[in-house]
Length: 244
Ligand code: ADE
Image 1 (tube, rainbow, N blue to C red):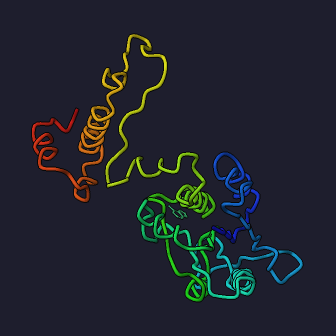
Image 2 (tube, rainbow, N blue to C red; image 1 turned 180 degrees about the horizontal axis):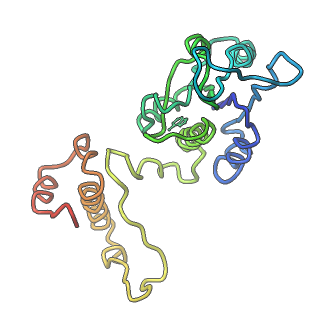
Image 3 (cartoon, rainbow, N blue to C red; image 1 turned 60 degrees about the horizontal axis):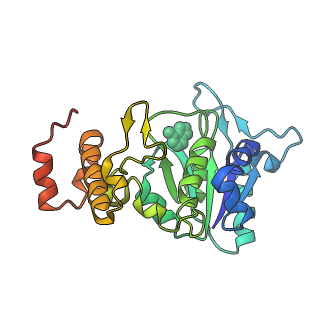
């Protein structure tokens, strides 16, 4: 999977993603990251890429042409149009399903805005997806792009050590993940749930599924609508105090 990021702060994106699991995935060439500095396409010796908004108002607007040229270079290199995500609080909210869908692409472009916004005309020309990472306003699109790249990368085969692990975690089947425990068996008088020490695989699986369902009901009841619960599980939840 190839990620391209159009940004005014390439070092921020590089520093963030060249660490940890995404960093290792790049070393293994399972993913690649190409940051493109929009300022390199300024077309003037000052590297100026923003200007005042027509109609007045606070702040500056990123101009269309440098972004257009940077994007055109990427499409020329690819030899075909590229799916292009613009990070904006006005977009569709990012979630695991969207990550799965985007992970099917071989190449993705992320456009990170700054200042008060980006000239609408270039967005109309190049953007295929407007995406928000949540209902709050950040100073730029870099962190959202990094969030998306991290999430999508771990769905690329081979990126996670355990090939199965993305399948068993939060949001799979619209359920939250069950709680995890490691050594010691007793920590500050708190014992590990005995079933996990029993060695009885079927009972462990049953307990984990139950915990996932209970957690989701308590903390993210909105997710349950999409979850595929058995009759028994629905019965179990009827007797639950959701405010626990
Ligand atoms: N840019 C600023 N805030 C954002 C958000 N919440 N999601 C995506 N891009 C943004």
